[in-house]
Amino acid sequence: MQLPDITSHSNVDFQSPLKWVGMEKIALPLKLAQPHVDVHLNAKADIFVSLDSDAKGIHMSRLYLLLNQLLANQSLSTKRINEFMEAVLASQKGLSKGAKLVLQFDLPQLKPALLSDNAGYNAYPVVLTITKQQSLTFNLKVDVAYSSTCPCSAALSRQLLSEAVDKQFSDEHIDKASLLSWLASEQGSIATPHSQRSYAYIDVTFSNEKLPDIGGFITVCEQAIGTPVQTAVKREDEQAFAALNAKNLLFCEDAARRLKQCFETMPSIADYQFKVEHQESLHGHNAVVHESKH
Image (cartoon, rainbow, N blue to C red; front, side, top):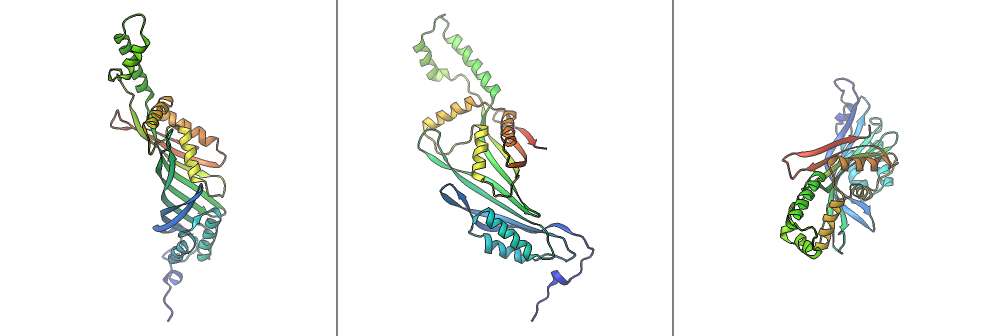
């Protein structure tokens, strides 16, 4: 007995192509190659095709089956993605000219401590959008956390320390040992600059038809800003982190300019936009910059 195919044989109310039709938030286990190891990911996949014909709808079940047949538990690569996209378009022959795959997952990255032999994992929220029309296009969204110490607060703290030293040591000549002892004591903690956990919400489109090195790109962003958040630390690492923040005092504008310069010098990036957000510890509101290439 032949079952009815409403999608193929029903007439539409009025003929109009649709940009993207498909399904969202499909559970999809994946692997992603990282240095020396494949990372297992629990991704959510959105899969769409364009509806360019006068048919009532697309063959959604075919998209779902192809996800499981060609991508589930497989290592993500440019070759595999291209094969998947070609299969998706073939499954909608006569209906679709374009396909889009959106993958959402947290990417774990092993991060060594600054000085000690400790290490731990940071998880980076990632959205990877792959579009197939005449060619493959890769768009990457990733959130990167970092620390920011306010330059203004640092200057005000230094002024208070200077005034305290002047008050504590009134003689014209200061005994070095006494000064060092006082600075190392609780009395030497006159003021500390305020710092905040900060975030860069990054959205980049790549210029080539190649799966980007997501972990490598994250590292480049962290190096550009200069003060990435840490994982497992010992006291020497915490002290080194305090020194790193003092060396890289950051207004949100400073962090934004560092990222912009980084992206402008990367030939693999065709377009970008981002937001940096310093979650203020002084105020109840945040300091924010929005920037884009165009």
